[in-house]
Length: 96
Image (tube, rainbow, N blue to C red; front, top):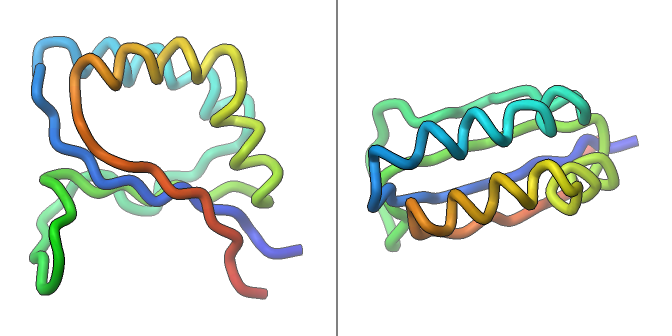
């Protein structure tokens, strides 16, 4: 079964609030077995507009990735994130 991934591009607009998002999201990530492959880090945008912060999170399956995003716990965190940043999250199925 292919793994599932969140691919996020984020620009933090309220840095003092963003740690609350991270703390609130952590239990959902733990529950659904999230593995952070990329979390911030040095980057070079060679094409397009992607934001300041890049995150790739691996899950056992796309279904697990979607379940984490749609979970009550993560949605609490998402409400904080949208007040502290702008960006996008795409959930994709990996290749086998």
